[in-house]
Amino acid sequence: MTNPKDSSSQEPRRLVCSRCGTEFGCDLSGTCWCAEETAKLPMPVKGEDCLCRACLRKAAEAAVS
Image (cartoon, rainbow, N blue to C red; front, side, top):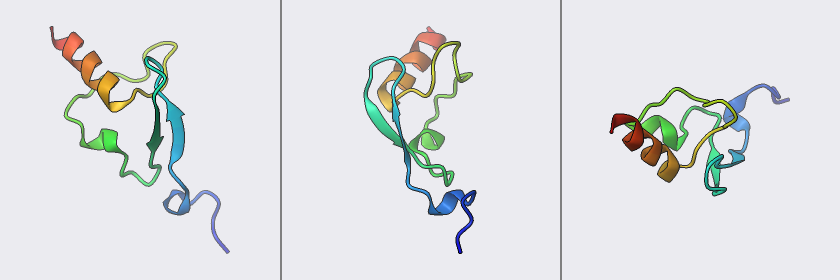
């Protein structure tokens, strides 16, 4: 029997970028692509959920400027 709360056996969840609408996956096992990004922002911004890689990078660049 599998534990339904065990995230290692779950499929990546499908998300839609809050800014551009691009669909992407989030791996709940802790190996999500965003963990590899050097850009770190306070998330979520009010009214937003996760961002795709391109929008995360653009937001980080704008925050530094």
